[in-house]
Image 1: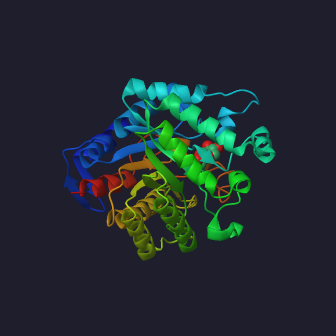
Image 2: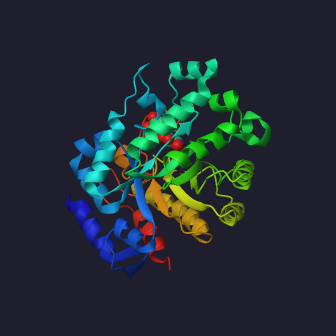
Image 3: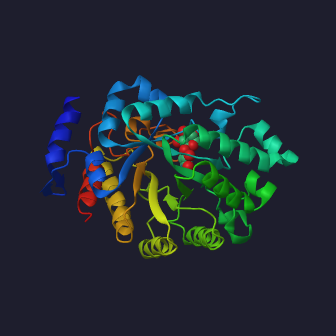
Length: 358
Ligand code: XIL
C-alpha cells in the first residue's frame, strides 16, 4: 500500500507531531512496545485475519497481541442450545500460535450477549455450574496461547441501584457478588500462570463508577481473591465528555496502591464529527488520546495497550447499533490506522508517548 508504506516509512524514522519531530530507532508500535515492556494489541476477528491479507500483514507489524472482538462472547460459543462452538476462537488462536502473537481472553464472564437458553439455565438455578463449566473448559483449551484474561467484564453499574454499585446482571441476580469471587478463583485454578483481569469502562468520565470499581477491587484484594490487573476499556469521547483528569489519576494511583497492574484493553474514540474535515477529526482524536495516555502514564505504564480495532476499516463505532449518534453508519475515525491502513496522527501521538517511557 503506497500511501500506507510511505506514511509508515515517513512516520517511523522521524515522528512528526504537531510540528515537532523526533528520530526513533523503532519502526512500529510493536517494536517500540516490546522495548518498553508494553504489549501492543488490537481487537480483531477470524474473518479479518484470514480473509483480509493486507490488514493481517499490517496487524502483524504493529501488534504482538490480538483480542477476539466477538468469537469469545457466549452468543458466539453457545449460539445453538446443546452445542459448544469454539471454531472462531480456535481459528484466532491458531493464527496467533502460527504468527507468534499472544491473545487476550475476552470476555470470560459478562452480562451481555447471553443466549436465551443460557439465561433460562441461569434462572433455573444452574448459574454456578454453568460458570464453572465455561471457565474450566475455555481456559484449559487455550492456556498455551492466552496469557491474559478478562475474567469478569463490566460488573459495575451504579445506576442499577444495587448496593456497592453492582450491575443487575443475570450472574448477580442468581449468585450475588460471589460470582465475581468464584470466577477469579476458578480462573486461577485453570490458568495458574495467566494475568487475571477485572475489565470495565467509563471510569475516566464517571467518578461514581470509578469509586464503585475501586470498592470492588478493595474487597477482592482484601479477601485475597486472585486478581492481577484492572483493564481500563478506554472507550473515549472526542466531544461531549471531558476526562476528569485529577480524579482519574487518583483512581489509577489507588489501583497501583492495591498492588494491581493497569491495562488499557479497548482504546478507541467515539468521534462522531462526520461533518468536519478529516484533518480536524484526526487532530481531535489525537488530542483526546494524548490527554488520556499522559494522565495514565503519570501513574503507571500499562503492560498491555490494546485498541478496540486496529483500523477504522473495522471499527464497531461505525455501526449505528453501537453508536447511536451515528445513525447513518459513517466511518468513525477513532483508531490508529485509517480505512486504507495508513497511520494517522494518533498513531504518531501514541508512538511518541511510548517512546518517552524510561
Ligand atoms: C462489542 C463488539 O465490538 C461487537 O462486535 C459485539 O457484537 C458486541 O461487543 N465493551 C466490551 C466489548 O467489553 O466486548 C464490546 O465489544 C464493546 C464494549
